Length: 586
Image (cartoon, rainbow, N blue to C red; front, side, top):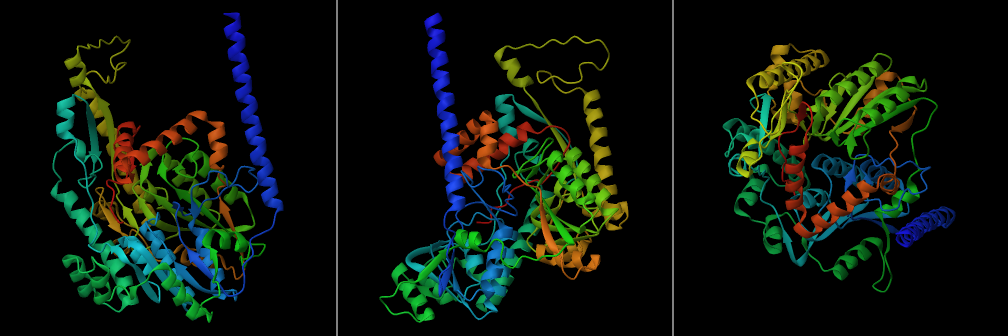
């Protein structure tokens, strides 16, 4: 036994030593990288936009983190937009080449990038696009280009938007595992899959209306760029009239087919280069590095941008999750900094914990009592994502933003049927009448259900009151557009849930005007730990991340997201204010 113990100790020591050497090696590489040559932007260059990683509104890695940049999988939309803005007036950049397949950005993010590219074109510089395959989102972005090309053997998807909802009622009955559900809002369809095997008329109505609004916003932008009417574009979608390169060209969606070498010749003509001359191409990531501090607004007085992105869960929070810990500290810093004269809260969240949403709402109220607070909605600001921002002075949203969903629900798993089938009997003993409030192994009692219903109704009433106070509406008017229904940004403006359509830049400009600022700097909050540092702090998180990556690769992205959604539903704790469904907008 002593030999075995010594052997295990020796093995553990070796592993620790290897781990320390590994960390020191990466710190060394970081120091060398920081001390090495910077990115050089050559004259007469073309900026290549090829986004192959997930796009966050804000990546926000702490620059003092020695592991920043290692194992990171993502880019910040704020940095991408800044790079495009700088490129507009950068004499070294002669044009932008869009070469993107399967853009991993939300639709509102894509729309905001598209607007930045429209602005870039006002410089007189060219934008060309080439792809082997255009998904609808990729084409939506590429359609802003002066010329849009496709590989001669490429494919194009242009058929309209859809949403698929899975229903589990029959599965619950067969397995004996069910979700006990309490909700408020006839449109709060996040829990509908556990109550039925078919889609309700109310849910079908709201999904169809939302898809129509988002699709129309996309077609409006595409139509303006390609000089095609909404009617023409819808006919193409209905008839699959762009399913081959030839058909897409004849329809006016594309300008021609090009192989890579032919595409390069297009650019050489634009740049005035001979056939034997090379094109100076700089990647978006390199250009972002080279220009990250260029042309930034400056001044002693500041506008703070506080980013709230991801699901809302109780706890600390990080780049992917909104937790009260991180956001409360960020908002407190903003409130106490006298140099910060106005605040813009950028929200991209499907919602989650109603408790955390209310905690953050209160912090926003405290900031608003001392300085103007404006809000910019990104891809989605629904349920809890809408809740935490509703008290702001002014709210901006993109036309394609998904918002509203003012409703709440609670779900609790129950395995009474399964336990009976496999011979498990649970017996309870308690000191008082309500000591045993709920057991996974017993059917939910009427008394406990009534308690939950009271909590749901109380939370919904508070939610509606927050909206009524923040939007200067009556509770009756809010309830009319609430009930858990989701809306597009366009509809939300008409209903009074949002003040104005616009980008994050528009919200910043409006905040500056309200605060009376002519020149100002920008400060962004919060700062996030790098993925590597987070994994080193929590080995279980590392195991989870590796496991998720393996499963994702094995079953594919679509199946993985469905599995993740089902897992998330079964793990929800507390009363939820959450977006009720997912949209397929690829």
